[in-house]
Image 1 (cartoon, helix red, strand yellow):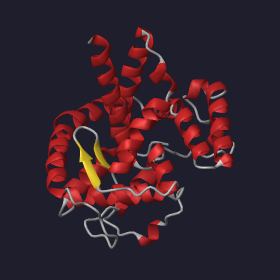
Image 2 (image 1 turned 90 degrees about the horizontal axis):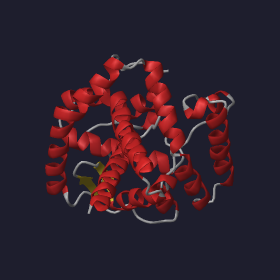
Image 3 (image 1 turned 45 degrees about the vertical axis):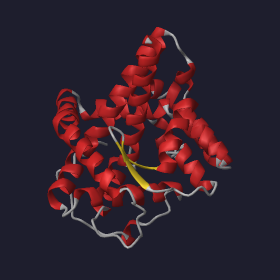
Image 4 (image 1 turned 120 degrees about the vertical axis):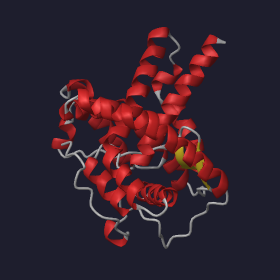
Length: 269
């Protein structure tokens, strides 16, 4: 029973971290994150498959309440006690830990060049990048990219299915929700059942959730306060962001609506 409970907790934390990363869309790039959030809007010309909107809105309200009462104060406290360079290093470290998942999905998508870049980034950042805290690979011209099994399924032609808001985990689709579960099993730490490995998974997943939420403080507050329909804005942003990720960043921001500037967004570079 103890093992089952621990495994469920790790599953929730890992998927919560995945959901936060998906919501941020831009991964570890705060500038790209700001641009994508600025593009979110309640009006979108693209048809939205949201047949479960009633359920989704209830789950969204539940998650938003938790975010206001727990996640936002925690993220603000985290920002207050850490320097922006430290936060950058933590994000780099967590992104480096996710490299095996990205590498496998690069291969599954038939992208050998991107798989090579992923492998190169891992070896460079794990060695001269102080275990992943630094990102010398970026300075060498090997840009970071993100892949997950939801994107892989999309490349294989699997339809996204209806939009779905999961309790605790946030925005998703049927395809992305299934993909997140598969990604969890692709991480090497998932298959290690020792107590130290379990504690490591707890700590990295927990820090990952907070680290993913911290750059979103001002952008999400801005959307919450300025949009006519916060739910529809986040839905629009999530679907646009996922489309961009599936297309390997080829979507242009000029074609997307603008909801204003976030001048208070902290420069994290």
